Figure 1: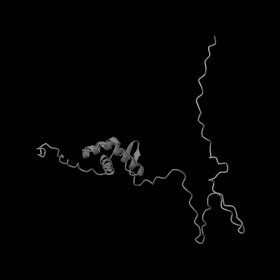
Figure 2: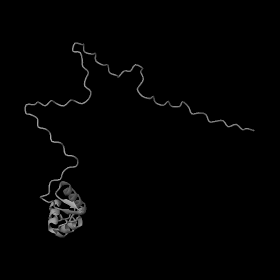
Figure 3: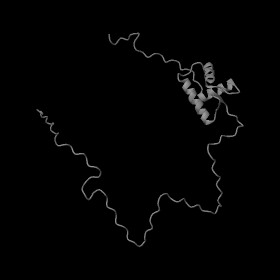
Figure 4: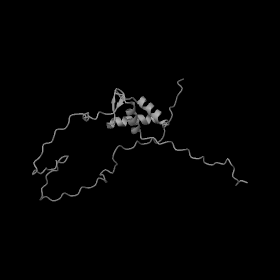
Length: 171
């Protein structure tokens, strides 16, 4: 009785067909910019609309993923942003320079020269007499002379509470 199978028992539903796999977002973005082919570039919303129109079903986090990949591609130099529009970089443009003053070119040293290592940090050690005996080893500071611990002593607890004040009648 209890072992009989019911037609509506808890069977797992058949697996849903896998959604068609999308290309990676950088590929989607580059394809959208090429397809839109605007001389001033394409903004984020037009790129998003083109991707939605081309591929239909997109993940729920599409806008977040699109923003993330646009920023990543902009930082890596795959895209250039001009007036809130994304463009492909000009292949003939000179490479971007870093901030600040460029370092001075180092003078070439002759091949016979031996380079000494740089001086170490910190104060140099005192000169010692090679004939003097070795100093005795230092004693560890575990035992102190006064027998007290370091630091402020703990606050002493009150022995007993103070008696309440006596109120006398002034009559």
